[in-house]
Amino acid sequence: MTRELTTARLARKQCLSSSAQCFHFEFVLDELKSFQFTPGQFVSVVDQDPNGKEQTRAYSLASAPRGNRFDLCLNRVEGGFFSNRLPDLPVGGTIQIQGPLGYFTLREPITDSILVATGTGIAPMRGFAQWLFPEDGPDRSEGREIWLVYGTRHESELYYHEEFEALAARHANFRYLATLSRAAESWTGLRGYVQDHVARIVEERAARLGQPLPVPAPDAATPAAELHFDIHAYICGLSPMIAAVRERLKAFGWQRRQIVTERYD
Ligand SMILES: Cc1cc2nc3c(=O)[nH]c(=O)nc-3n(C[C@H](O)[C@H](O)[C@H](O)COP(=O)(O)OP(=O)(O)OC[C@H]3O[C@@H](n4cnc5c(N)ncnc54)[C@H](O)[C@@H]3O)c2cc1C
Image 1 (spheres, rainbow, N blue to C red):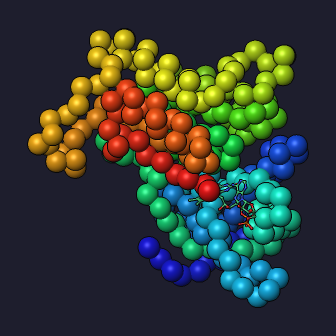
Image 2: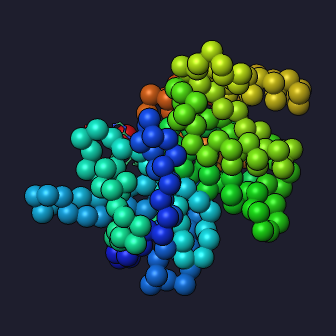
């Protein structure tokens, strides 16, 4: 883990949702030739608040490694310090970052994977998707089934929706399930909470593969590090959602190490 601060220059900013005040940011690290990180990691943004106190906030990298550039995705939080400072940053303005940091990364070898996000929890999932299915290089998904279950309240809060739809159209093993908890009548897609769709994916997959559910418990003598799984879940967002998904997966007999999480709160 590096404690060094690096200057990142804002090259592009795009409002993804005006109602949710969510923004996509593209930064360049002019001091570096390339910015090496593992998809899913985060950077810490460091700045002084109006009282001169140093503040640090974590933001997931919303892209796969791409030269000396990286993307972030964040929404304004009422009364929040950083989440308002960043959207107000003009293009050409700079921030100080530490990192990359964190262990919310794809376990290798790649297995079937259920990516689960709500809100800006989609940020690391975009990094995973770009890395697994690069536009300009070989597919890294190894033919595994990859589901992205993305939940939010309203359609206007589905960030990067067209990108994921286009990716799903190009890759038969990438399934994009966007679900709304407060959908307008005109919404023809999925409704309800992410945990219900995750449960359905697990049940249908087990039925298709002829696997029992709940999964039989592994031999208690096997050290945790030696357990191998053919499916993982990667869950990112606020803790109530993470707990709800985790509970459903545990009820299916899933082991702790199969469930990889990143909490934003
Ligand atoms: C590993 C990690 C990665 C993260 N990645 C992202 C990311 O990619 N995009 C992103 O938007 N956020 C992300 N976050 C959350 C982010 O770090 C900040 O907490 C968030 O932007 C609010 O910061 P702030 O300075 O504006 O608010 P603060 O000044 O810290 O808090 C102001 C008030 O808002 C509340 N609050 C803080 N965070 C939230 C929240 N997320 N939702 C609702 N209320 C909140 C606080 O409890 C407080 O009452 C991540 C957090 C972690 C730990």
